[in-house]
Image: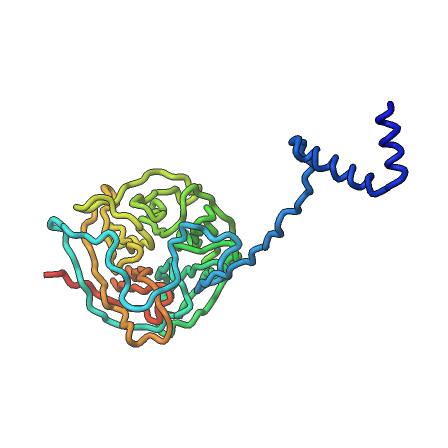
Length: 322
């Protein structure tokens, strides 16, 4: 008690000792290892990234598919055949002779082409730009046009019983139109992608970018059979626009300058048509894409071909390759 009263007396007489005592207490607490409460530090501010624009040649849909098989067109000679046949094993090959050249809309991304009653019917693709067209063969003038909703990418086209059936790429939908008025009559659905379509008089025949061709009922669109297309190298993939000509299925092979002639009963390739160099790239005033588009005038035996964004449509005859 004597010591406590002495300390009390000293604190009353000199306030500075109080300050010293407090500082000493803080120092002793720190040395004893008792942590003090940390001061909260706010997290660093996050920079919100801005959208990086994509440099695409065509309007992109809201969600761009990652496996889009339609890149921006390239100049120059179309890419080499994919896959390029190396061993034809006796399969006939053909080159061509140009009989006539006709104007073609260079803004038409040709996906389907057919001839009927003196005019061409054409399906043009790309999101926000797809359409169905009736085209004058001599001038290339679009005589009639029906737009396709912007969320659809139009593909192959076939005429069946005075109705035009137009596929779409990844939307699993086929539109049905009246041939004369272009009035939409209905639609079908299917589980695969839609690329090309033709018919053999009984069945619709459809491609989906693989080596398979699907036979479908023209009224219900139900699958009735399928074949795998093969040559000496194995399956022939990327079958695109189709035309049925004299008992054979003819198919553009996407990203090539070749057309496969196919036996519809077996899927075997019976001939290869090489159209390399048919479009003179030195005369182009804007970019063109790959070969795609086969039409046949059965009454007069005339064969027509064109391509995506091509300014020209060609009438050709085949020449057996020596």
